[in-house]
Image (cartoon, rainbow, N blue to C red):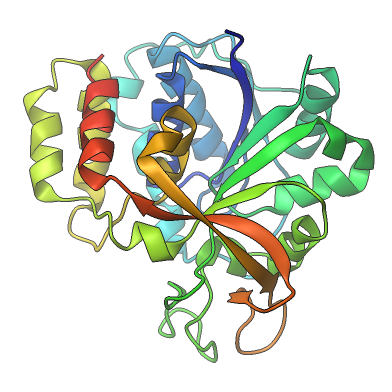
Length: 307
């Protein structure tokens, strides 16, 4: 059975690295590259940490590319600085040499190149804003035919968003950060004919990172990947933290864990609701992950990271 071709596009938050780590454990996936979008991170440490993770897991042949796109509404710097912490974790710095290559092209140009050269259509696994995807589509509209589907962690359909008013005064609380960073680019991707499978806050709000699960990772820390995952989650455990990107990525490995539901939607690009993914009759049809077997998911990530 041929492997599913995947191109990863993450934005350097703590759970983005963990989603990348999970993706690398999937035997049914051939990862063609990793693009880092400079949204929930500072780009240099985020790309560096990603390359070191690929080295640690034995995938140093897979290139990493730095996107140069810019959003409209910046993530808070307190979120973004975690990329420095991850890049300095001792487990990622056991060697002075990083073997995983940094692509010469920008992330958006790298995306165009990988898609054009792929032997068959590619799944885009996107755990940050859709800006790099939208920019690549604008630069090379022909690549739409080389995209199998987009699996995306983003949006909030029938629950409140996570752009808090204390961070962004004047917003009405309906936006999710991966949309809010650049709602115009999200709307650009909505204009395509591509299949979009969203993992919205409606689902992730029900799948928290728990102390019990992090303790379990600690008890299997003799596995380097569990050790790294546990360190990452220990960093964020004081917060209300959820399996955002990891839950979205796990869909590629076990879609049978999930129930999908079709919605008609639009992206709000201006005003108090800028960054909202709104359910509207006659809107753009997407699939959203609606339900998940939570216990199967928890068991799956523990098993995958036991290496």
